[in-house]
Structure formats: C-alpha cells, structure tokens
Length: 117
Image: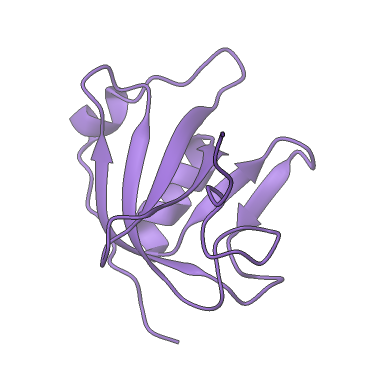
C-alpha cells in the first residue's frame, strides 16, 4: 500500500483546534486530484493525532463510539496529502487520495451524490 503524507503539526497549531463539548471536531475529506468533497466525518484528539502521524485518515465513529481507520473493513482507504484548519479552528479539511471504489459506505465515490430538486 502507498503511504500517505505525514503532517508535522506544531503544538501551537494543534492548540488552535476547537473540539466541541463531546470532544469532537468536524472533518471534510476532499479529493486532492479533482476537488470533489468526498465525505464529512468527526475526529477526536486521538484520531487527529493518528491521522497526522500515520498519513492515513482515522475518524471517530459517533455511532460505534470507537476509532475508525477508513478502509480497514472496505479496503477503500484515504491517504493524507494535505491538512488544513479553518479560521476559527472548529473545522478541519484534509485533501486526500481516495484509494478504492469510494468514500461513502453505500459504495458511491462521494457521500454527496444526492441533490435537491
């Protein structure tokens, strides 16, 4: 398997991440090649640290209350290429290389395949 890009965030940068009352921060995964928004999920501090150090997306599953390394079950994993935090520090953006069929648990390439209207 290809390796993702590890990110050496500083302690000052990490201190700017604003986790909510449940200890979570929303995360957008965007395709680094074409800009498609692939999915939105949540991270806690541990999953953020793991993602940055491993170069592979690790999320927090609110329904299962456990860490969730994207692709461990499906094989459709996400390799980190770049990482950003917004001006308020309350949302993260990861530009990823989507490996496999798709990011969505339904098998679609992106979770945002349905439109209004």
